[in-house]
Image (cartoon, rainbow, N blue to C red; front, top):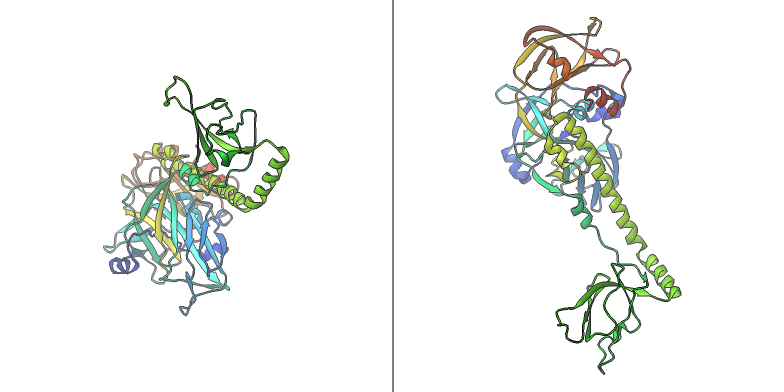
Length: 458
């Protein structure tokens, strides 16, 4: 499987410090010696590939909602020379424990004191790049920046880079946390000039018949069409003021005669329009030809934003099935969390918080199916609802009986065996030997959605 080449993924280290400062303060941490492969190859998280022209700045809007900003001259060959020919960049993100499991990512490591800990994640991705089939390096003078989507604003998380040569994590400080709304992103889109309008029944013209110096002569042949589609102004006015709003619209103000005070003015915002249908059609065709490229770009950007938000909301809902936190529900459709960092090296980057294994119950586990037949399970993991972490076990199972837990592993013939949250509720033992009666799915599961629905039914 091609994704085995990214075995230990660059776990997003997000930092606000300079590269030099990071190097001085980095704390090497021993990663797990375990090397894992995707447990269900057909359901592995597949990396998206992009062809990059390294001689110009490039921005990638990933389907996850993350944004990858690549400056020109960002890639070096094995000799340290700047690469100018096309580069293939691969990128994939991991947001929840099932993402992490299906990619085969180890989340445990041993600290300086020999204590084995587990990473709780606030965002993780893998990035790799190659040129003519050979791996390339990051140019330290032109670093790639990633705005990675996250579902936590908690500042407790630190940035870690994994050194593939020494298999150690390097702690590199904090990331920068930002939030955005869909409305804000749409408002940043460029605006196309307003197209010509056909004059309707409430369109009007303005003239100054009382003064020799006609201040409205510039609008002698112009028709004003009220934006709101309603009648505006009156036939005779003491004064008419036209203010160009510089966005393709005009504010027309009518000052009345008679005993009505000047403050009783009538204002309306209007488009310029055409009464002559032939002239209108001609002007509209000119407009379409002139701004076709800009209009297409705006529409494509709007679709990209719509798709990115749809994907973000979908992943937020999946995340919430693991977390069951009301604040995540409130995020859906309203606010997006982004964590910004520079990429120091290709590989695995992680934004994590190290913590100890769950406490409260410690069982010497064996596994049987629903008929009592012994099972030899591989890649056994436990997820504690409310913690974005993946606990890997072999025989001894640690868990918090006060929390909801789900445990699963793979049978020898590639089927999913699982122990549900309700099964844990009925488990009275807190220590000693226990045979976990696993539910074995009758068919081999091959998609992310199928596995999610089996393990975490809403």
